[in-house]
Length: 465
Image (cartoon, rainbow, N blue to C red; front, side, top):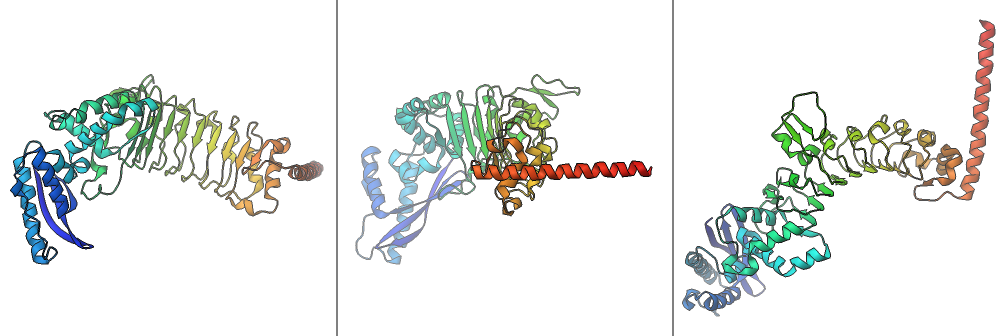
């Protein structure tokens, strides 16, 4: 792509003038700011490294250096200087000039060269230490673009900038974080959210976290189905299927590998064989679709901070242990055991639940977070009072918390297990247990009285009949 450069303006900073340079590379544009002394330093380097004519740079002038007329003239002269340099080196821009124009931040070949050089020095140590490597979509896009070009794999023949360093690192990397953005990159018009990138080069990844990248950008993620153990996607999708089954856009009638189907299908989609943790929190997901059939080994599922109004299809996840559905739009959960199976931890905080009848058969549940819902009465907790394994319960932020003696009235719903329940992060005290015993006795007497009244009423009815 043809590169263009213009000096489009200037600014007075303290007692010197800074010139604003606009660089264009295809559809991408960015601005760079430099004072005259920066041009001078650049020219000195180019004279040595690229044999540039010494007379090409306009001379320095001391008198009236910040006058408007001189600045405007200098602006034109510096623009001509930069344009001449680009014409002089059409195939490969010298390293000092590339650095001066910030090619390492915005231009595709410059970005890959900078990444390759970084990995030449640090790549092996990063791999040995097992650190998470953080990369931008722009960098991955640049690598993808460079691999499609019939050009040398190194910049100016410099072995340190060879693409091979990137490819070797990608093939061996285990932990990757991709951090996108919704605003233009730096001083450019580059929108990272519109840049596609290919992940098929990562052959050994165990963990990947992708932030602020749309599902349309992400290519090659399905190539990781055999080895990826942890997948985190945030601020990027409105459907689980767009991430787990990208093939769905091509094959409408698909079925998961190993599943029997009574309908005609056009594709059999392989399952994620190693995936045990799926974190799709902070998205715009409104439904748990049938794509979860493809993640049968998942034990940890985080769908918090989405737009779910119901819980479906999770019965396909036989290995689920921990589920986070906090901060969604859930109003009720009917027969939750039919979908959530034998889970141990369930986070339902930040929803709109006003009763708990649907949770009554989650017999393996150990930790339950119901904070910041709409539960109004302590006896509304009675539905979960008989859960045999429940040890931690959070109800803070519910209307019932303002009721006098709220803790003891809730703990009383657990009967003989009251001492085993840690409510809102606080262990039950002996004083609370004494009060619970009193409440249990009162309730027992009340139940006996109601039973007796019911029996008397029945006898009277039999006499009348």
